[in-house]
Image 1 (cartoon, rainbow, N blue to C red):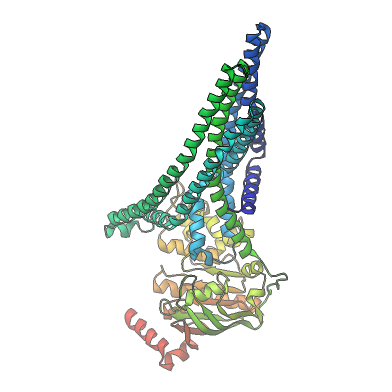
Image 2: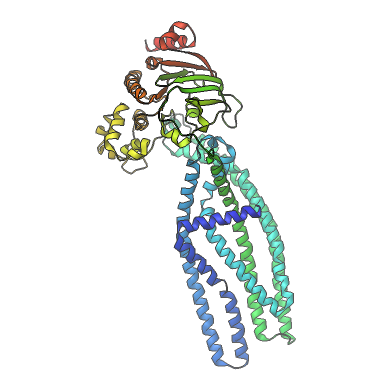
Length: 597
């Protein structure tokens, strides 16, 4: 880590701890400052006591002994207090880092980074080393106190005998070997990040509800465990090899330091025997040399822990920079319109997902007229959901432009545009809150408006859902709550659909397979009702409804049907025009008619 990066990491550590708990941060700093000279004071008092004893000055001996006891008691009390402060501060700082990590992840406007290995690997290091982040301030402040204390001890030793300068110099090889060991360990964390992520995903799959039925039906449990063990073993073996190598290198530096300590003690004892040093000097040197030796070990350990902490902090700082770079907005962003006049145009849109070579969309041109209901159909992988994500700016196209009433979407204020857009995604979230909250978060200003929430449930065809639950809108959903209710797949989808209905007059309503868990008849009735609502909204704001569906009977009421195939537009027209045209749409529609007979 470069000096600039290290300084910045230290600033982040101190600022985060201070923001998490100001009082305990200051108290821990004060404890460290008081503790700095405790061992040095003890050594000086010992020299005074020994000298007084040689001169038969009993009063001074008693006073010195009492002061030594008081200093030791103070040191013990400070140690207890410091440990208590450290535990409290660590807990609160851990919560602060969790909140900041969630904020950094959530505030990135698009979602492409979730498919970037570099981002996922660095996030995995942060998430799997929470203690390093939480304890970073305590490690650094206590480490700083130990280093200052060591400098004071060295100064006193040099005043006793100049050759004592050798002792701290012997720590340099230890520092060098410690740094080498840290680099080896840090590299192993990066090298094993992928195995750590895979092991975590396998553990989640084996212990969560999502795939529980499929795992049991296919008796997949042993295979998941085997793969988890392989990934975990790969990670631990890589880290263990690095730790063994680092330990061997560091041991050599410590042996040299130990030899220097033994030599220093021998030298000062020899000086005492030949009369060139007093008994007090000999005792002080022995005590301080022992203290220094211990402190050098502590300094090296502090350096080791600090390097480890700084490694994790550097990943966190990278995450901060990444989020800021992705949050950058145009110097002057155009305001989103309050009404659509011409509509939305996609021209020459080409897109591929990060880290892949295949083009999901290729030179796509689509017109979405203001006030229209447009259906998007096509086989799996044709690019339908990708268009939905591009229209909400979850991703940016590789080539081409999306225009809103002639203004490039990338030039609009992203927050304003999203405030005028609502969507029900194919991979909708099962938000485990109370029912009213899980729906109401679709429009946060109306979160507490029970009437609006009930109306959204009605528009989603879920008006009877609250009535079937014992506590109505206050019913907690999901197994995160001890008394939570687990909904069926269709009920969860209706909750998600109601959440999308919380905004009454959006400029763009995106429905990406919003009723896949419903039967065809229920889906048709829902879309028929929603088409009338969409046209009412269209008259007021020129809003557009874009419906993605595999069921062609449900798109018959759309003003325009766009057929995608292989990432390109194959056909456009009304349902009646496409059925009589004899193309892809005709074949697919005929197949579904026969299937549902």
